[in-house]
Amino acid sequence: MGFPILTLITFVPLLGSILCLLPWARWRGWDKDQEEDFIRRLAIAVSLIPLLLAIILWFAYDKTAGGYQFEEVASWIPALGASYHLGVDGLSIPLIFLTALLTTLGLYYSARVIKRRVREFFMLFLMLETGMIGVFVSLDLVLFYVFWEIGLVPMYLLIGIWGQEKDRPQYSAIKFFLYTLAGSVAMLLAILGVYYNTGTFDIVKAAELRPFSDNLTLASLAFWGFFLAFAIKMPAWPFHTWLPDAHTAAPTAGSVILAGVLLKLGAYGLIRINLPLFPEASKTWAPLMVALGVISIVYGAFVCMAQTDLKRLIAYSSVSHMGYVMLGVGAAAFAIGMTRPGILDSAAMALNGAALQMFNHGIITGGLFFLVGVIYERAHTRELNLFGGLSAKVPYFYGMMMVTGMASLGLPGLAGFWSEFFVFRGAFDIVRVWAAIGIIGVVVTAAYILWRIVQSVFLGQYDPEKIPHWTDLIDGSETHEPTDMLGFEKVTMWPLVFFMLLFGIYPTPILAFFNRVTTTLMNAL
Image (cartoon, rainbow, N blue to C red; front, side, top):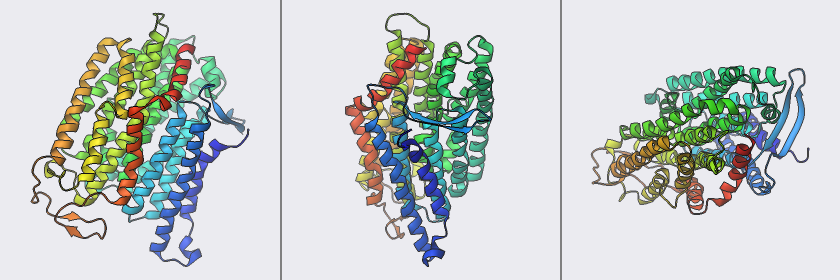
């Protein structure tokens, strides 16, 4: 089996969460503040290990060979037929890196802003990382399901305990839990159906056997069992209503990891499970997938225009931006079985755009939620109508928001442009009318970024009467004007802005991962 790098990258965070629970104050003779400072540093240090391992995976993966690499296979539950089967390919490696990066940045940021129940917060955050990475490395359906569920409870508690009371955190947490659990039940039934039909839980073997290939009705039922779970998690319209409430109530780092990684679990599942296991059902239901994707793009963008809460606006923007992923996957599914010259290349290009959008949305929207936290910690409000003229008061914050906002609207030269371009380039050759309708979302996205965020928050005349008291994060005192970003906030944003610029100018390094996977998948279907 070799060096178990995937086991380490998955379970080191879980070990770290256990270490956070140990009674360090009793052992070392510390007071509560000393223990909490140690737990903060411990959690950040532990998170750096999977980040380093993710970087090693990035450079060690052989993109020319493709396929699953670094596989680890061991007997797990013989009576059930479940195995401990881990492996990564060009689709999962960038997402593992994204998860490790956002986890480290979230912990680093939270070390300065989380003041209550520190032990529990950092423990849950590390446990959540294990669940997310576990989904991306699992090649057994039972293992996939276990990791899928591991992330449910930590996120529920992060929202319910550390959310702002005015945002109804308990209601939002329960809503998130129930929606996700409903999808999980449907997925569990589909997993059992796959096992009874193929005799295996192994994702690779099941894809070769094509469950229910002789019965489209049963294949469609299994397809929809998985699809419902994945669509809720993405979330796609009309399964999206839990998302704005969860984002609004969650603490800053919780919103970052929710938008940056948890939504990607659903999109990842569509490409990893639905397409290869159920190609005929995917083809049958492709028009509906395309329609849901376009509706999500346009609907999410228009709803953003109506928002007055900055965090809620960015939450709805995730509905719109994840719609591009659904459109790309749906277009690829639509092309299955078509023989027109070049159609499979277009399908692979749409899938490339969907996969790239998963990564780009993580770094861009993760950055936007960090920036919302920056202004909220000072103003203690997110109401857009109360801001204005901040470009002269907080120029560094203004610059960071401009770069991140422009990346979100798809400005050429920044990362967000290429993922949308690839999706539309592929979709226009397959589902031209739907792709043309989806373009409306691009225009409206530019409108809400420029009008609702840039103009409302940064331009115009600054009015000190609207927010008379701001908080100075250095000493916690009240000030009459906002202070600009501090060092730890800048450090949190620098890696994200770096990738926005790098993959905006030169996306080839990350596309090389996705292209081999998508091309191989479409040729196999």
